Amino acid sequence: MNGNESKNSPEKHEGQSHAHDVSGSSGAKMFWVSILNAAITAVEIIGGILSGSLALISDSIHNLGDTVSIILSYAAIRISSKRKDIKKTYGYKRAQIIAAFINASALIVISFFLVYEAIKRFGSPEKIDGTLMIAVAVIGLIANLLSVLILEKDSHNSMNVKSSYLHLLGDTVSSFGVVLGGIAIKVWDVVWVDPLITLLVAAYVMYEASKITMKSIDILM
View: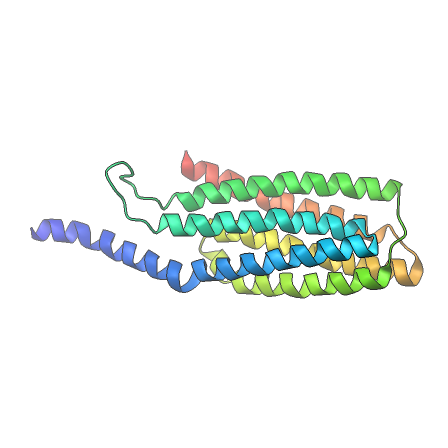
């Protein structure tokens, strides 16, 4: 009996520790970040339509995709806290690895979309309301930066959280690029800054997402 207790104790302790982490840290943070990101998406869609800014509309689509990914990550954290059963003898903790793989793969697809949109903007720039564009982009920048700070600590301990963290980091830099683009359009009428920054952001996110994708595949295999 003592042998069984000794075998079960680490497993029990691990389950209790993980459940505590979900309820007290990562899970709650992911929930509030998903709400905040959904709000950013709505603001940027409205701002993009009113200002005529394709950059804001594209950024809102990016944020919408990230909102779905963050919700997926939050769901994975909740699922992974379930105890093992007869069918799932290893438990559900690999749900986070699967979510990390899906999120990172989505990041790569989104990055290709950003590259495509940036190339199109180089060829056909449009006049927009720079003042409204800057105002909305600043709101998005502040909200994204807040989300990044919320998840920064937990991103070092979970591939799942890190994939969502990278989504938000890309959004933060993208919002900063939109701010710079708005300033350039309003002050100097320089429209190539926004797509240039978009290309740089897409390259960085693609690189980081590829590492997460390969690492998650290694673990799952």
